[in-house]
Length: 359
Image (cartoon, rainbow, N blue to C red; front, side, top):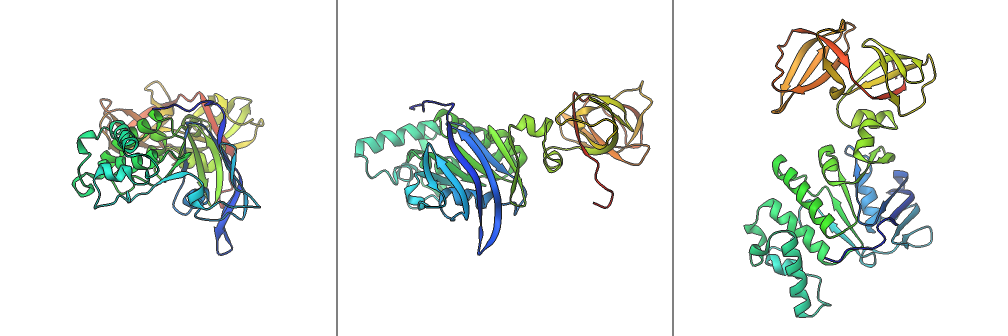
């Protein structure tokens, strides 16, 4: 597999993209970029505009403003908008879109008519090997599992040597375990082929498993484009903090540059944003921040527990009536209704200005 060069160069560049339907805006001035060989993801709830952005990049929808550049080549700006067939972009959909009357090899060879017979054979063998399906070369799609069909769909798009592979909710029709397996295998396939790709999904676990960089969207706006680690530990927007992972917002008062007084005690740690002294804030407490500590005078009552194998998720009610959660190893088994001392271990303080109660 030939590797791309200049991996540090910006390869996909989206700048102030705006797009909609029938005069109604759907995405509002979103900007992000990918380096060559990176996998990006647009993540958000239904109706946030992520699929509209993907359609605009693919050329199925004409933007009202903004630019789309791939490898220094302008695909769309205020003067022009190249049609899909002139963009050299691959597309993978949820429904696989394989030809049922063609074998796996014939599906992979589709669109390679400019190559000689021996060259087509070589490319097909290369991608059959890449997706570990050489033994299925002469099998028809109906004889394959959903996961196998989706791997063939990805390989068929890659065989066309696209500048970027676009994936629109490609695993949403599959069961949970199969999705997890495909998340790993598709990422491996893209990385081994050094393919730049952009995925659209509403599934956080999928985004974290596949992508190098993730953009969280809501109501047509891109709130943060970052790594999974930073989205979780250093969210730059309250919606991102609330949408990514689990957690509870607890009222607090800033008492120092890295210190907040809360019902859970005086907490110290590095904040992702400057905290004005004595300002009213909301502190996000993640389940992995909360520890059971018998020596602590701050107590919580277990009101709910969810056993998930290696861990158990507990919901605890504080004296004020607010709830927090803690994720503990499953061998630490506590009864519903029991009281426990709590300690917060949070090196990152995630705080935002306190919202009015009627907001």
